[in-house]
Structures are given as C-alpha cells and as structure tokens.
Amino acid sequence: MYYKPKPISFKDLELMRLIDEIHLRLPFYGSRRIRDELNGSGHEVGRGHVSTLMRKMGIEALYRKPRLSEPHPGHKVYPYLLRGMEITIANQAWSTDITYIPMARGFCYLIVIMDWASRRVLSWRLSNTMDTSFCTEALEEAIIRFGKPDIFNTDQGSQFTSEAFTGILKANNIQISMDGKGRWRDNIFIERLWRSVKYEEVYLKAYGSLVEARQEIRNYFEFYNYRRRHQSLDKKTPDMVYWATLPKRETAA
Image (cartoon, rainbow, N blue to C red; front, side, top):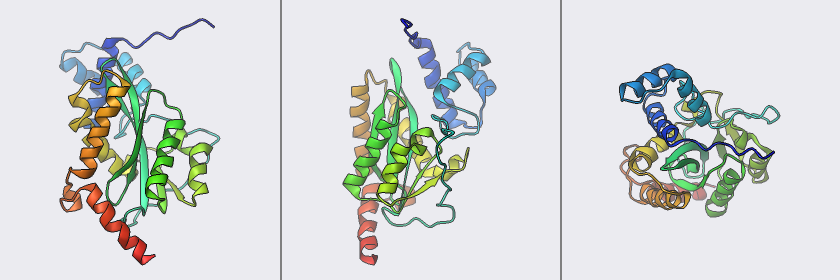
C-alpha cells in the first residue's frame, strides 16, 4: 500500500520520443525493425525493451497512430458511416483522436476535435492521464462553440465508446460512427493532422512542462487554423473553408 511507481528514466523517455518519430514515418515497422533503426543511430537497446516501451505508448505495427486505448468489452461499438460519403460542408462530419506528445521530462496526451470538410481544429485538450474527462471536455467545448455535426467519427478506444462520451453525442442527436478495428485510414484527416503537429511543432521543441506544452500547441493551432494554407483546400486555410461552407449548409436547410 506504500508502493510508489518508479518514474520513467530520461533514457527511456528519449527512446520513446525516437520510437514515436520512427513509427510516424514508418508505421509498418514492428519492434524488430524499430530496434534496428535505433541501433543504427547509436542507441543500444534490445527488442524486448523496445516492445515494452511500445506497449507503454500503445504503438503497434501497421497502425499509423499510437493505439492509445483498447475497446472496453462492455461498451457498444458503432458502425463506420463515412465510407463513400462526400464530405464538402462544415459540420457535416467531425472526428477525433488522441496522440502521444513527448516532453523534456515526461509525456502527455493530446485530443483534437476536427471538422472533416475544412480540417479546422474546433477544440483540443492536453492531459497527463488517459481518462475520459479531457475527451468529454473537448467535445462539449466544440459543441458549445460551433454547434453540432450530423456525424461524429472516432476509433474504438474506451474513451470514445464510454457512456460519458457517447451520451453527449446521443443527447445532441448526433450520429455516431466508429473506425473499423485497425483501420487507421478511416480517420485519415486526423492522421495527417498528427503528422503536421509533430513535424512542424512538437519535434522542434522540448516542452519543459504541461503549461508550456499547452501554450505552444495553442499557438500552433492558431497558426494551423488561420494561416496555414492547404493544397487539398485549394490553398485556403481551414478557417476560411469552415466559415465559407457553413452558410451554404444553413441556407440549404
């Protein structure tokens, strides 16, 4: 009853950061190949230890993203509703996901709520634990600020299949969509966002605290929404596309 968990060593934190970078670049690499990549860059580490760290991060080969949470056996899983749909207007479909964020002396988790048509980040939260509350807080903020979508897509993680999370969606009459197990392509726009966030912000810095990480990521998302132009959006920013397509939907309604 007096046991205190041993903190993660600085060496392991550095290895986890490197594993995250390798995995984002080469999602089909398993522990053996990631070990080889690490050894080739001067980090002597065995496959067993790489596997342990990958499990701690929730990373698995053939996943584009960290599998940060497992489905809860008692939670309902919903079908994927977006296959074949043309998503062209704001608030037609939103999606969410969680990713691992390395810091100088630890790590945290980032959740984002995104509009599919515009790629606009509607809300986000950072947390040093993987509980459901920071996910529901982000969802509630997005609904309060931007209304509600027709469809909300998630993976099958326990945070998103929980009654606390799905209850908010059902209370607002939002259709619930969930990726097929292991199908990272079902949530491809969030995956592309993680690549942008990590290569353009996170990997360039070593956040000294959760407070610093929150401020720097806030600055990045302001840049991403209002200034970063996307080729796929005809060189417009997510904010431009969101507000340009939202009135069309309201007029049609």
